Length: 219
Length: 172
Image (tube, rainbow over all chains, first blue to last red; front, side, top):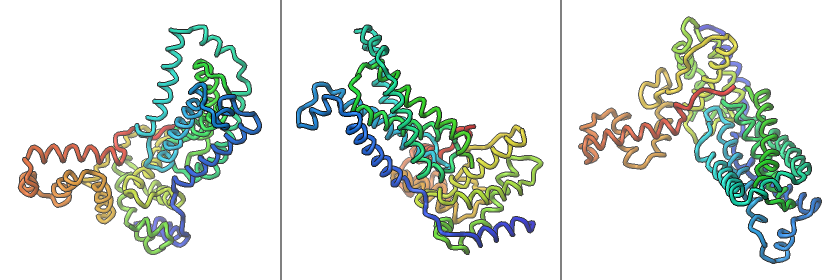
């Protein structure tokens, strides 16, 4: 045994201070609060889609997409947050149970697009031709704002074995939650629109976060 | 137990933990890096343990956590050195724990066994911890020898899945 390791152990023990173990619950609470705040922001500043406005006044929605679209992205975001909670520890890894919500949401959307492509191809093109700047900028900007909050509250304490994946999942989580909030306003329900512009905004957020993860989540 | 006390600020427990871990880490790195004394990596791992000690979940086994920290330091070292090395990812937590302090290993195994069905955990406990033969476990539990073997095999696979072995290396 050399002296250097013994000295290091002495130094580390001498410098020891109590720490609060990393817990997932504060992240979940913050994520739920952020989703609620984002939805309220969209509701009051962008205005609700007609079906949501009708629901607020106690009327049943005319289309299930009024609630299904926000739910789809909320489930996607929750699955990604679950993955973030797992991946933040050194021994953490991507588990099939956390991927399940993401896979289910993706499968639903792809199935809807395939159905439209075969049964009403004109609708697919109509969806793609809709203006989407507000949609994508809101999702990307809101998702990145959420990512900053998540980084300060959670990611800066992480010690992951998979920095790129953790970054991507964090971006996917915040982007999907922002998409869920934006869906309170947006009544463009074409499957092609959702898959290209909504999912595109979420994918951009996840890509930026993956790059940030590669750069800054090493430890 | 020691790590939990260390998170609470118990310096004596922390010093004990680091001293107990040091030979295990040394052995871990020397097994994987031929021709290296591994001492630098041990020190880097102890530093990482210190700075990231809040990421240890007190309700989880300690061994997978410290093994992952060590594996990360090893991968960083190999990447920096531009060397190619096989990083073993299938540490056998039930069998040969190397020089892992016995109390740490035993506590890990006990925590993991709690996550298995009661019968399966009992069979693995008798066979792997109390070192009874298959026939002795069979007599103690009233199950056939082949049922005991199957229970042990499946139980160990579940335990491996729980601690994340055979999952590939760290990304970028």
